[in-house]
Image 1 (cartoon, one colour):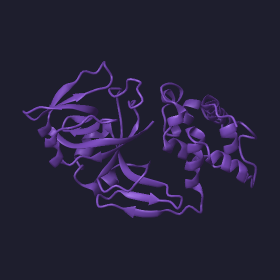
Image 2 (image 1 turned 90 degrees about the horizontal axis):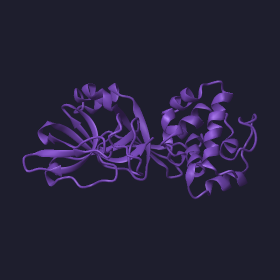
Image 3 (image 1 turned 30 degrees about the horizontal axis):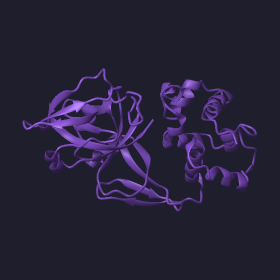
Length: 273
């Protein structure tokens, strides 16, 4: 089996050409910027929604061809992948092959999920194979003005904003919200950095915890303030109630901001890009 990630990327673009769709438009329609797909982004960490979109929008694509280059681009009528091939794919220990096959389970008609909802109104879809996905509404950073008008009313937010799902490993009790980042302040090419346009899953940090200060985190925080929505590290809480917001991109300088003007803070627990 051809496990070279660059070849899988090439086949995705070949399929776009085969369908008569411009490569950039094809990738963007599947939820990723073309720049991230070709440049900074490594395909081994392509977000699950991108994979979902390939399989849901193009169910006729031949998974064996996509993963290995074997066979035709599209399945023949009633074509089935052999059980041996499925086992080979499912047993891959890591990488895109493993992720695509596991994501494909979500499109098995026999995989009816159990739907659960926590006290914050977040929906969880629990599948028979123990896959868990959380559904949250997604706030683009650029929609700051619209969000602060309704941030304290979950029902209005659900009606106002689109939804997004993330694969998670457990059912959480907190308030989870999705975001779409804007700007490169948290991108410096590191493994835990986040480029512009990434989808972010955040868990709200209760205001009663703010006084204890903020620890260094793997992915940083999303800060909802009167003046904007920012993805930053919170590097310091001063005695005067000011927090220092720092970036991972050295071209973006840290700045202080008053906690009194902060409406919500979310601990970033997952990113997709």
